[in-house]
Image 1 (cartoon, rainbow, N blue to C red):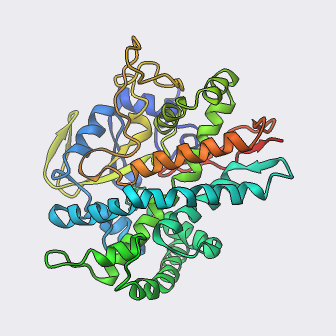
Image 2 (tube, helix red, strand yellow):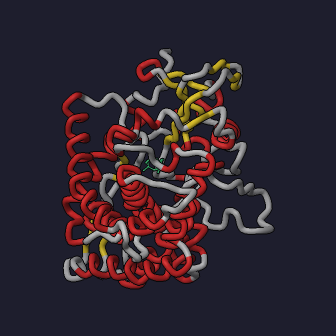
Length: 399
Ligand code: 2IO
Protein backbone atom coordinates (compact mmCIF):
# COMPACT_ATOMS: atom_id res chain seq x y z
CA UNK A 1 0.00 0.00 0.00
CA UNK A 2 1.29 3.41 -0.89
CA UNK A 3 1.39 5.87 1.95
CA UNK A 4 -0.39 9.11 1.29
CA UNK A 5 1.63 12.22 0.73
CA UNK A 6 0.49 14.48 3.57
CA UNK A 7 1.27 17.94 2.33
CA UNK A 8 -0.63 21.19 2.37
CA UNK A 9 0.17 21.41 -1.33
CA UNK A 10 -1.58 18.13 -2.08
CA UNK A 11 -4.79 19.13 -3.96
CA UNK A 12 -6.79 16.92 -1.57
CA UNK A 13 -5.82 19.24 1.28
CA UNK A 14 -7.62 22.24 -0.19
CA UNK A 15 -10.74 20.14 -0.77
CA UNK A 16 -10.79 18.88 2.82
CA UNK A 17 -7.84 19.38 5.17
CA UNK A 18 -9.27 17.56 8.22
CA UNK A 19 -7.64 14.22 7.45
CA UNK A 20 -4.26 15.96 7.11
CA UNK A 21 -4.82 17.90 10.36
CA UNK A 22 -5.35 14.58 12.18
CA UNK A 23 -2.34 12.93 10.59
CA UNK A 24 0.01 15.84 11.23
CA UNK A 25 -1.02 16.37 14.87
CA UNK A 26 -0.41 12.69 15.58
CA UNK A 27 2.61 11.90 13.42
CA UNK A 28 4.35 15.04 12.29
CA UNK A 29 3.43 17.96 14.59
CA UNK A 30 6.24 20.19 13.30
CA UNK A 31 5.89 19.39 9.61
CA UNK A 32 8.40 20.68 7.05
CA UNK A 33 7.28 21.78 3.57
CA UNK A 34 10.29 21.73 1.31
CA UNK A 35 8.58 23.60 -1.52
CA UNK A 36 8.35 26.79 0.52
CA UNK A 37 11.07 26.05 3.09
CA UNK A 38 8.76 26.47 6.07
CA UNK A 39 7.57 24.45 9.08
CA UNK A 40 3.90 23.91 10.00
CA UNK A 41 2.73 23.53 13.63
CA UNK A 42 -0.59 21.67 13.94
CA UNK A 43 -1.16 20.98 17.66
CA UNK A 44 -3.11 23.37 19.90
CA UNK A 45 -0.38 23.42 22.58
CA UNK A 46 2.38 24.24 20.09
CA UNK A 47 0.41 26.92 18.26
CA UNK A 48 -0.52 28.51 21.58
CA UNK A 49 3.12 28.38 22.74
CA UNK A 50 4.40 29.95 19.52
CA UNK A 51 1.87 32.78 19.53
CA UNK A 52 2.45 33.54 23.21
CA UNK A 53 6.21 33.82 22.83
CA UNK A 54 6.52 36.68 20.38
CA UNK A 55 10.16 37.43 21.20
CA UNK A 56 11.26 33.95 20.09
CA UNK A 57 8.68 33.60 17.31
CA UNK A 58 8.61 37.08 15.77
CA UNK A 59 6.44 38.66 13.07
CA UNK A 60 9.52 39.62 10.99
CA UNK A 61 8.42 37.30 8.19
CA UNK A 62 5.69 39.87 7.37
CA UNK A 63 8.36 42.12 5.89
CA UNK A 64 8.34 39.76 2.89
CA UNK A 65 4.75 38.57 3.03
CA UNK A 66 2.98 41.88 3.62
CA UNK A 67 5.19 44.96 3.17
CA UNK A 68 5.49 44.88 -0.63
CA UNK A 69 1.74 45.49 -0.95
CA UNK A 70 1.17 47.35 2.33
CA UNK A 71 3.98 49.84 1.51
CA UNK A 72 5.08 50.05 5.16
CA UNK A 73 4.71 48.09 8.42
CA UNK A 74 1.36 46.73 9.62
CA UNK A 75 0.33 46.64 13.29
CA UNK A 76 1.53 43.06 13.78
CA UNK A 77 5.08 44.13 12.84
CA UNK A 78 5.30 46.72 15.59
CA UNK A 79 6.56 46.17 19.14
CA UNK A 80 6.85 48.04 22.43
CA UNK A 81 5.55 51.59 22.80
CA UNK A 82 4.78 52.01 19.11
CA UNK A 83 2.65 48.86 19.04
CA UNK A 84 0.82 49.86 22.21
CA UNK A 85 0.04 53.38 21.03
CA UNK A 86 -1.11 52.42 17.49
CA UNK A 87 -3.22 49.60 18.90
CA UNK A 88 -4.86 52.01 21.36
CA UNK A 89 -5.70 54.40 18.53
CA UNK A 90 -7.32 51.66 16.45
CA UNK A 91 -9.24 50.37 19.48
CA UNK A 92 -10.52 53.88 20.15
CA UNK A 93 -12.04 53.90 16.66
CA UNK A 94 -14.00 50.69 17.18
CA UNK A 95 -15.17 50.85 20.82
CA UNK A 96 -17.35 53.10 23.01
CA UNK A 97 -18.99 56.03 21.22
CA UNK A 98 -17.32 55.13 17.96
CA UNK A 99 -18.82 51.65 18.10
CA UNK A 100 -22.23 53.21 18.69
CA UNK A 101 -21.71 55.44 15.65
CA UNK A 102 -20.82 52.38 13.57
CA UNK A 103 -23.69 50.10 14.60
CA UNK A 104 -26.49 51.87 12.68
CA UNK A 105 -24.20 52.00 9.63
CA UNK A 106 -23.69 48.24 9.84
CA UNK A 107 -27.42 47.58 9.84
CA UNK A 108 -27.97 50.08 7.02
CA UNK A 109 -25.43 48.28 4.83
CA UNK A 110 -27.04 44.89 5.56
CA UNK A 111 -30.57 46.15 4.85
CA UNK A 112 -29.55 47.97 1.66
CA UNK A 113 -27.93 44.85 0.22
CA UNK A 114 -30.68 42.37 1.08
CA UNK A 115 -33.29 44.79 -0.30
CA UNK A 116 -31.86 44.02 -3.75
CA UNK A 117 -32.73 40.32 -3.37
CA UNK A 118 -36.04 40.43 -1.49
CA UNK A 119 -38.11 40.02 -4.67
CA UNK A 120 -36.07 37.17 -6.14
CA UNK A 121 -36.13 35.18 -2.89
CA UNK A 122 -32.62 33.92 -3.53
CA UNK A 123 -29.20 35.30 -2.59
CA UNK A 124 -25.62 34.02 -2.61
CA UNK A 125 -24.38 34.65 0.95
CA UNK A 126 -20.77 34.75 -0.26
CA UNK A 127 -20.78 36.77 -3.48
CA UNK A 128 -24.06 38.73 -3.43
CA UNK A 129 -24.04 39.53 0.26
CA UNK A 130 -20.85 38.75 2.23
CA UNK A 131 -18.15 40.18 -0.04
CA UNK A 132 -20.13 43.38 -0.68
CA UNK A 133 -20.99 43.89 3.00
CA UNK A 134 -17.39 43.15 4.02
CA UNK A 135 -15.91 45.89 1.84
CA UNK A 136 -18.64 48.43 2.67
CA UNK A 137 -18.39 47.96 6.43
CA UNK A 138 -14.58 48.20 6.29
CA UNK A 139 -14.89 51.43 4.29
CA UNK A 140 -17.23 52.80 6.98
CA UNK A 141 -14.54 52.18 9.62
CA UNK A 142 -12.11 54.23 7.57
CA UNK A 143 -14.61 56.94 6.64
CA UNK A 144 -14.40 56.17 2.92
CA UNK A 145 -17.17 56.70 0.37
CA UNK A 146 -18.96 53.35 0.01
CA UNK A 147 -20.08 54.30 -3.51
CA UNK A 148 -16.58 53.19 -4.51
CA UNK A 149 -16.96 49.74 -2.94
CA UNK A 150 -16.72 47.83 -6.23
CA UNK A 151 -13.30 49.12 -7.25
CA UNK A 152 -12.00 49.04 -3.66
CA UNK A 153 -13.17 45.41 -3.47
CA UNK A 154 -11.18 44.55 -6.60
CA UNK A 155 -8.02 46.22 -5.32
CA UNK A 156 -8.51 44.62 -1.91
CA UNK A 157 -8.65 41.22 -3.59
CA UNK A 158 -5.33 41.94 -5.33
CA UNK A 159 -3.44 42.77 -2.13
CA UNK A 160 -5.13 39.97 -0.15
CA UNK A 161 -4.01 37.48 -2.77
CA UNK A 162 -0.37 38.55 -2.37
CA UNK A 163 -0.45 38.17 1.42
CA UNK A 164 -2.36 34.89 1.50
CA UNK A 165 -0.66 32.91 -1.29
CA UNK A 166 2.33 30.66 -1.84
CA UNK A 167 4.28 30.47 -5.10
CA UNK A 168 2.63 33.29 -7.04
CA UNK A 169 3.61 33.73 -10.70
CA UNK A 170 5.44 36.89 -11.86
CA UNK A 171 2.23 38.02 -13.49
CA UNK A 172 0.17 37.54 -10.32
CA UNK A 173 2.76 39.48 -8.32
CA UNK A 174 2.63 42.29 -10.86
CA UNK A 175 -1.18 42.43 -10.59
CA UNK A 176 -1.09 42.56 -6.77
CA UNK A 177 1.49 45.36 -6.82
CA UNK A 178 -0.66 47.29 -9.30
CA UNK A 179 -3.68 46.96 -6.98
CA UNK A 180 -1.53 48.21 -4.12
CA UNK A 181 -0.42 51.23 -6.20
CA UNK A 182 -4.03 52.00 -7.14
CA UNK A 183 -5.04 51.89 -3.47
CA UNK A 184 -2.16 54.20 -2.60
CA UNK A 185 -3.24 56.69 -5.28
CA UNK A 186 -6.82 56.54 -3.99
CA UNK A 187 -5.99 56.78 -0.29
CA UNK A 188 -3.02 59.18 -0.09
CA UNK A 189 -4.98 62.36 -0.95
CA UNK A 190 -7.61 61.36 1.64
CA UNK A 191 -4.93 60.72 4.27
CA UNK A 192 -3.33 64.14 3.56
CA UNK A 193 -6.71 65.89 3.62
CA UNK A 194 -7.39 64.58 7.12
CA UNK A 195 -4.23 66.01 8.68
CA UNK A 196 -6.27 68.36 10.89
CA UNK A 197 -9.53 66.44 10.86
CA UNK A 198 -11.51 66.21 14.09
CA UNK A 199 -13.66 63.33 12.81
CA UNK A 200 -13.68 59.86 14.36
CA UNK A 201 -13.02 57.60 11.37
CA UNK A 202 -9.84 55.54 11.73
CA UNK A 203 -7.82 57.58 9.21
CA UNK A 204 -8.61 60.79 11.12
CA UNK A 205 -7.88 59.11 14.47
CA UNK A 206 -4.50 57.91 13.21
CA UNK A 207 -3.72 61.48 12.09
CA UNK A 208 -4.77 62.82 15.51
CA UNK A 209 -2.58 60.27 17.31
CA UNK A 210 0.50 62.41 16.70
CA UNK A 211 1.82 64.08 19.83
CA UNK A 212 5.15 64.66 21.60
CA UNK A 213 5.79 60.98 22.21
CA UNK A 214 4.09 59.53 19.15
CA UNK A 215 4.80 60.30 15.55
CA UNK A 216 3.33 58.77 12.44
CA UNK A 217 4.10 59.43 8.78
CA UNK A 218 1.56 59.44 5.95
CA UNK A 219 3.14 56.26 4.61
CA UNK A 220 2.68 54.59 8.01
CA UNK A 221 -0.96 55.70 8.04
CA UNK A 222 -1.36 54.25 4.54
CA UNK A 223 -0.03 50.85 5.67
CA UNK A 224 -2.31 50.78 8.72
CA UNK A 225 -5.26 51.85 6.56
CA UNK A 226 -4.56 48.96 4.16
CA UNK A 227 -4.06 46.67 7.17
CA UNK A 228 -7.48 47.62 8.56
CA UNK A 229 -9.12 47.33 5.13
CA UNK A 230 -7.70 43.84 4.65
CA UNK A 231 -8.23 42.49 8.16
CA UNK A 232 -11.80 43.82 8.37
CA UNK A 233 -12.77 42.57 4.90
CA UNK A 234 -11.09 39.26 4.12
CA UNK A 235 -12.59 37.01 6.85
CA UNK A 236 -16.16 38.40 6.84
CA UNK A 237 -17.94 36.63 3.96
CA UNK A 238 -16.24 33.40 4.98
CA UNK A 239 -17.34 33.46 8.62
CA UNK A 240 -20.91 34.56 7.79
CA UNK A 241 -21.46 31.89 5.16
CA UNK A 242 -19.96 29.13 7.34
CA UNK A 243 -22.19 30.26 10.23
CA UNK A 244 -25.30 29.96 8.08
CA UNK A 245 -24.09 26.69 6.61
CA UNK A 246 -23.62 25.24 10.10
CA UNK A 247 -27.05 26.41 11.24
CA UNK A 248 -29.06 25.69 8.10
CA UNK A 249 -27.70 22.20 7.58
CA UNK A 250 -29.06 21.11 10.98
CA UNK A 251 -32.77 22.04 11.41
CA UNK A 252 -32.77 21.13 15.12
CA UNK A 253 -29.86 23.48 15.92
CA UNK A 254 -31.30 26.13 13.64
CA UNK A 255 -34.60 26.06 15.51
CA UNK A 256 -32.86 26.40 18.88
CA UNK A 257 -30.81 29.39 17.75
CA UNK A 258 -33.69 31.02 15.87
CA UNK A 259 -35.86 30.88 18.96
CA UNK A 260 -33.14 31.71 21.46
CA UNK A 261 -30.86 34.30 19.91
CA UNK A 262 -28.56 34.22 22.92
CA UNK A 263 -27.17 31.05 21.35
CA UNK A 264 -25.84 33.06 18.39
CA UNK A 265 -22.72 34.12 20.31
CA UNK A 266 -21.76 30.51 20.93
CA UNK A 267 -22.67 29.54 17.35
CA UNK A 268 -20.34 32.25 16.05
CA UNK A 269 -17.49 31.07 18.31
CA UNK A 270 -18.07 27.47 17.20
CA UNK A 271 -18.06 28.53 13.56
CA UNK A 272 -14.77 30.39 14.06
CA UNK A 273 -13.31 27.32 15.76
CA UNK A 274 -14.46 24.72 13.22
CA UNK A 275 -14.10 26.85 10.11
CA UNK A 276 -11.39 29.34 11.04
CA UNK A 277 -11.39 31.88 8.18
CA UNK A 278 -7.70 32.68 8.80
CA UNK A 279 -6.06 29.24 8.74
CA UNK A 280 -2.39 30.27 8.88
CA UNK A 281 -0.36 32.63 11.06
CA UNK A 282 3.33 32.80 10.08
CA UNK A 283 6.18 33.49 12.52
CA UNK A 284 10.00 33.76 12.18
CA UNK A 285 12.51 32.27 14.63
CA UNK A 286 14.70 34.76 16.47
CA UNK A 287 16.84 32.04 18.11
CA UNK A 288 17.37 28.28 18.04
CA UNK A 289 14.51 26.35 19.62
CA UNK A 290 13.63 22.68 19.94
CA UNK A 291 9.95 21.93 19.35
CA UNK A 292 8.71 18.33 19.65
CA UNK A 293 12.17 17.05 18.69
CA UNK A 294 12.60 19.33 15.69
CA UNK A 295 15.34 21.95 15.88
CA UNK A 296 14.33 25.31 14.49
CA UNK A 297 17.06 27.88 13.78
CA UNK A 298 17.10 31.69 13.75
CA UNK A 299 15.49 32.90 10.52
CA UNK A 300 13.37 29.75 10.00
CA UNK A 301 9.68 30.31 9.24
CA UNK A 302 7.00 28.39 11.14
CA UNK A 303 3.35 28.63 10.18
CA UNK A 304 0.70 28.06 12.86
CA UNK A 305 -2.14 25.91 11.54
CA UNK A 306 -5.10 27.57 13.27
CA UNK A 307 -7.69 25.26 11.71
CA UNK A 308 -5.86 22.19 12.96
CA UNK A 309 -5.17 23.56 16.46
CA UNK A 310 -8.85 24.43 16.81
CA UNK A 311 -9.80 20.79 16.11
CA UNK A 312 -7.21 19.27 18.43
CA UNK A 313 -8.90 16.53 20.51
CA UNK A 314 -6.50 17.40 23.37
CA UNK A 315 -8.15 20.82 23.56
CA UNK A 316 -11.78 19.96 22.68
CA UNK A 317 -13.90 16.90 23.22
CA UNK A 318 -15.62 15.80 20.00
CA UNK A 319 -13.67 18.49 18.17
CA UNK A 320 -15.32 17.99 14.78
CA UNK A 321 -18.85 18.54 16.12
CA UNK A 322 -20.54 21.94 15.77
CA UNK A 323 -21.78 22.20 19.35
CA UNK A 324 -23.81 25.36 19.99
CA UNK A 325 -23.69 24.61 23.73
CA UNK A 326 -19.93 24.12 23.94
CA UNK A 327 -18.38 26.40 26.48
CA UNK A 328 -21.52 26.72 28.57
CA UNK A 329 -20.74 26.52 32.26
CA UNK A 330 -21.43 23.28 34.10
CA UNK A 331 -21.65 21.23 30.97
CA UNK A 332 -19.86 17.96 31.77
CA UNK A 333 -17.30 16.29 29.52
CA UNK A 334 -16.73 19.23 27.19
CA UNK A 335 -13.54 21.20 27.46
CA UNK A 336 -13.73 24.77 26.31
CA UNK A 337 -10.34 26.21 25.57
CA UNK A 338 -10.39 29.64 23.99
CA UNK A 339 -10.18 28.96 20.28
CA UNK A 340 -7.26 30.41 18.34
CA UNK A 341 -9.19 31.92 15.41
CA UNK A 342 -8.18 35.47 16.45
CA UNK A 343 -4.64 34.40 17.35
CA UNK A 344 -3.22 34.66 20.86
CA UNK A 345 -0.68 36.75 22.75
CA UNK A 346 0.62 40.24 21.99
CA UNK A 347 -0.72 40.28 18.44
CA UNK A 348 -4.21 38.90 19.07
CA UNK A 349 -6.63 40.44 16.56
CA UNK A 350 -7.52 44.01 17.69
CA UNK A 351 -10.80 43.80 15.78
CA UNK A 352 -12.00 40.65 17.54
CA UNK A 353 -14.64 42.29 19.71
CA UNK A 354 -15.97 44.48 16.89
CA UNK A 355 -16.14 41.49 14.57
CA UNK A 356 -18.11 39.39 17.07
CA UNK A 357 -20.61 42.21 17.62
CA UNK A 358 -20.86 42.79 13.87
CA UNK A 359 -21.36 39.10 13.04
CA UNK A 360 -24.10 38.83 15.64
CA UNK A 361 -25.88 41.94 14.36
CA UNK A 362 -25.71 40.79 10.76
CA UNK A 363 -26.90 37.27 11.59
CA UNK A 364 -29.84 38.63 13.60
CA UNK A 365 -30.94 40.92 10.76
CA UNK A 366 -30.68 38.12 8.19
CA UNK A 367 -32.67 35.76 10.44
CA UNK A 368 -35.34 38.43 11.00
CA UNK A 369 -35.68 39.56 7.40
CA UNK A 370 -35.18 36.40 5.35
CA UNK A 371 -38.30 34.39 6.21
CA UNK A 372 -38.02 30.60 5.98
CA UNK A 373 -34.37 30.86 5.02
CA UNK A 374 -32.90 27.60 3.74
CA UNK A 375 -29.94 26.35 1.75
CA UNK A 376 -30.73 25.94 -1.93
CA UNK A 377 -31.04 22.26 -2.77
CA UNK A 378 -27.87 20.49 -3.90
CA UNK A 379 -25.90 23.38 -2.57
CA UNK A 380 -22.92 21.36 -1.42
CA UNK A 381 -20.04 23.06 0.33
CA UNK A 382 -17.11 23.86 -1.96
CA UNK A 383 -14.32 25.56 -0.03
CA UNK A 384 -11.40 27.47 -1.44
CA UNK A 385 -8.12 28.67 0.03
CA UNK A 386 -5.25 27.47 2.19
CA UNK A 387 -4.26 30.64 4.07
CA UNK A 388 -7.65 32.27 4.29
CA UNK A 389 -10.41 29.81 3.52
CA UNK A 390 -14.11 30.02 2.79
CA UNK A 391 -17.02 28.67 0.76
CA UNK A 392 -16.88 29.51 -2.94
CA UNK A 393 -20.61 30.25 -2.92
CA UNK A 394 -23.63 29.58 -0.72
CA UNK A 395 -27.06 30.22 -2.18
CA UNK A 396 -29.95 30.59 0.25
CA UNK A 397 -33.66 30.81 -0.51
CA UNK A 398 -36.33 32.65 1.48
CA UNK A 399 -39.68 34.34 1.02
C1 2IO B 1 -2.67 41.91 7.26
C2 2IO B 1 -4.63 37.72 6.79
C3 2IO B 1 -6.77 38.77 6.50
C4 2IO B 1 -3.88 41.02 10.17
C5 2IO B 1 -1.75 40.87 7.81
C6 2IO B 1 -0.44 40.97 7.12
C7 2IO B 1 -1.53 40.99 9.29
C8 2IO B 1 -2.58 40.36 10.16
C9 2IO B 1 -3.77 38.23 9.90
C10 2IO B 1 -5.08 38.89 9.90
C11 2IO B 1 -5.99 38.47 8.78
C12 2IO B 1 -5.56 38.73 7.36
N1 2IO B 1 -2.67 38.97 9.94
N2 2IO B 1 -4.99 40.30 10.04
O1 2IO B 1 -3.69 37.04 9.87
O2 2IO B 1 -3.97 42.20 10.33
